[in-house]
Length: 414
Image 1 (cartoon, rainbow, N blue to C red):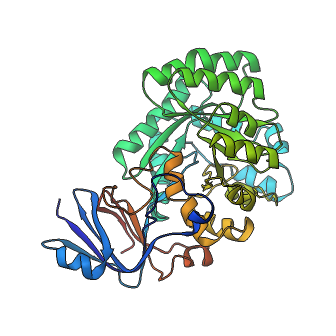
Image 2 (spheres, rainbow, N blue to C red):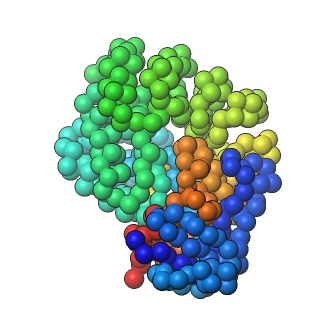
C-alpha cells in the first residue's frame, strides 16, 4: 500500500494525551494542530504534525489535501443494536399520538415486534439489511461500532445475529465489537426464571465456545430483568471470560448502576434516572457511563442524563447513538454531538472526546483507535467544515467529506 500524506487540515483534531480515558478538564483538551497533517504507512499513523513538517517527509505518497476541512479520529459508537430485520414505524406513529414506551410494549410493539421480524429473517437477509446500516454509520464518520445481539431471544437466533456481526466485521470497513445481549427481554413463550436459565446454561456457553462476543450486556429494568437476575447472568458471563456492560437506570431507578459498580462492569449505559450516590459509586469502581441522548429525544422524553454532574465527578463519559429500530433510529454521531451540547450541556470539545477516545477505551480499543497518534490505526474522517464545533452546531445533514480506515479511503462523497 502506498504511503498517504494528509496535508493542510484547518484543524487536525488529534486528541493526543494520556494512555487512558480522559476525565474532567482533560475532556476539553483536543490537542488540535492547525494546518495539520499526518503521514500514514501500512495502515497506521507514522507521524503527526504541521503540514510543513509532514511535507518534508511525504516522499512518493498519495496526497490527501484537507485544506479548509476538519480531520477527526473516526467516531467510535460504543452502544448500538445494528443487526435487526424490518422497522418499527407503527411504534413511531403510536408514540407521536402520545403512547408511552411501556404502553406500546404492552400492546405487542417495542422490542418484541423486532424480535418476531428478526427471527423470521434468514442470515443472508439479515446481513444485507445490516450492511445497509453499516453504510449509514460510515456516512456519518463512524469507523468503530459496538454491536449487540438481543433481537433473537432463542439460542439459534441469538447466535445467528452474532454471526452476522462477525460477517459485518469481515465484509465492511467498520470494526464491529460484538456484545451478547440475550437478556434483552423475556420471550412470550418462556417464564422469566426459565429464560434466565436458558441464557446462563445454553446461550452463554455457546457464545463463549464459538468466540462470538467480547462483552455481555443485560437490560436491567422493571419488567425485564431485575437486579438478582441481572447479577446472576453477568456473573455467569464473567466466568466465561466476557467483559460486562449493563443497560442501567433508563426508565426507572432500579439500582442497576450500583450493580454495575458491584460487578466492576466496563460500562453502565443510559443512566437517565441515576442519582448522586450512584454517580459516586461508578466513579469509585471506574465504570464508564455511556450516555444515549438519541433515545431520550426519540422517545419524546425530557429526562436527559446528568452529563455535567458526571464530568464534574470525574467520570470518563462516553456518548453513543444507541442505534436501534425503536427508541433511537439514528446512526448519526454528529446528531448525538448536537444533543449532547444542547440538551446535556456538554461543551463541543467534551462531546468529541466522549465519542472518540473515551468511547474507544470503553470498548478496549483505546490503544488502537480514538485519537490520531503515531502507532494507531489510521481511522479518520474528513469533514466539510473549518472548525470542529460546526459538527454539533449545524445539525440534520451530513458534513462528511471522506472516511478512511487503516489508511484506505472507504467513503467519498464525490
